[in-house]
Amino acid sequence: MARSWREWEKPLRDLEEGIARLRELREKVAPERAEALDRQIAEFEQKRDEYIRVKYSRLGAWERTLVARAESRPYTLDYIQYFVDDWVELHGDRRFADDKAIIGGLGRIEGQSCVIVGHQKGRDIKSRQFRNFGMAKPEGYRKAIRLFEMADRFGLPVVTFVDTPAADPGVESESRGISQAIAEGMFCMFGLGVPSVSVVIGEGGSGGAIGIAVANRVLMLENSIYSVIPPEGCAAILWRDPTASDRAAAALRLTAKDALELGIIDEIIPEGFGGAHRNPQETADNVKEAILRHLKELSGLSREEIREQRFQKYRKMGIVAEPASTEA
Image 1 (tube, rainbow, N blue to C red):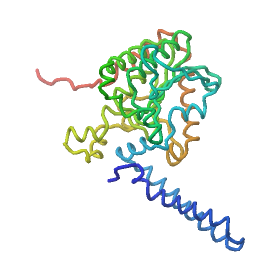
Image 2 (cartoon, one colour):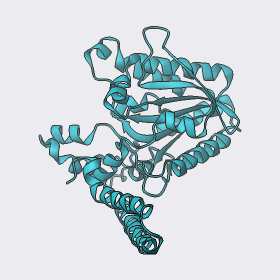
Image 3 (cartoon, rainbow, N blue to C red):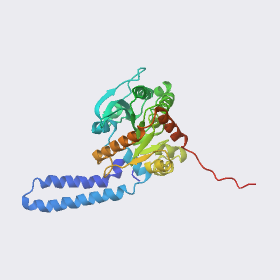
Image 4 (tube, one colour):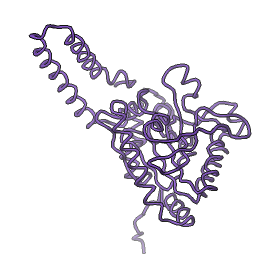
């Protein structure tokens, strides 16, 4: 079993490196040899595309977890760069500090002004430390609350991007009330009188995710995950074996398909060919279209109807219909 995304995608990267070497050689050879190299490049590209097509059509829960964690997947700021105009980031919770693991501000999507909040990870050691690996502290959720309240005052829809393994588990975060900050974020979102759309773009890790994801519409990218605990933690607790993470991932039902079947989310957004990490532009286009479509559908509701729709959406989660008793 592959333990990391890099290990799992190694055959594919080998093919792509071979294509890159052939293309480099193609630039240096005489014209009479170029045609043969073109045929070889086309053959390698066909093998690569077929590998992607077959592999990604058969992804299991653990493999999707690895894809969701891939460091080359677009993060919140990448989506903002792709389709948000006039972006202005706002900082700080006005109480303690500015948490870099959650970013937020104002922007326009196809002319629609909105407040945007999302988790932000890093791609190298320095940026990961700066962003605390996307794990928000209490001040991050309180910053989000400040922006949600501002959106409500000015009648602006809220868009959130979820991508976190969990909320920050450190002692300092506990001492500053991380669980209360998450609960206050959920409470605030329940009371918003403006439309809200949340998109899980990578990892949707437990309370760290839902603290900014209580929305009228919750969407997931097809290779994202949404779970109460990481598979490794689940495996360590249930089977005392952290290497049983593939078994745990399946048991957790953490994929977008599972979440849709369970009524946790409203739509699965398709990713570009080969996943968001290989085709970010097409994925961003799909995310943009889905956000705008859902905001348009919600725009005709009154403030009270928006609150009621959101409330009823979450009230219905977890309802189990039991068969009637046959006892006399």
